Image 1 (cartoon, protein in one colour):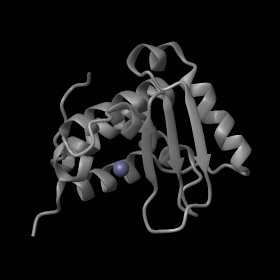
Image 2 (image 1 turned 135 degrees about the vertical axis):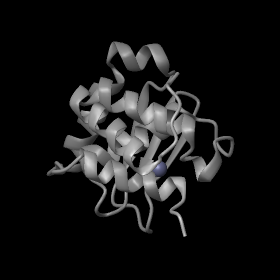
Image 3 (image 1 turned 90 degrees about the vertical axis):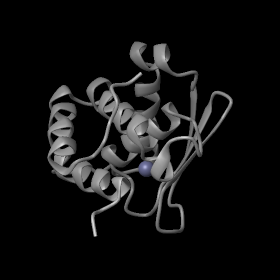
Image 4 (image 1 turned 90 degrees about the horizontal axis):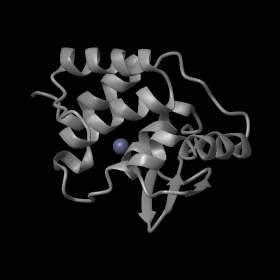
Length: 144
Ligand SMILES: [Zn+2]
């Protein structure tokens, strides 16, 4: 059976982002995210101005919620790395809960994820991600 979009996206992202970079403290990770939401690009595409980072979060999946201009990231025990944080920030960016097919990892999210890597991390990773998406049949729309 063909993999669903969400799982193909996870695999593509996992491949494009190796090797992973881990934070040594929650405070370091929190500071890293705060530095990124202050970037001009983020401020032009999102109204999120504050981040609450909760770690470690019990469960199998990290969770992201947005209330007003506050983004709450609840990261699972093995989620304290820059790529997992970028992924969750992209969920905050396309906050259209329940409106992007395949459990919120649809075309719109995939496109936003590419731009998050490009503007918050490195253009090379964004390009690698596009290549992996296309190789695996992950559907994405240019964002915004
Ligand atoms: Zn996700």
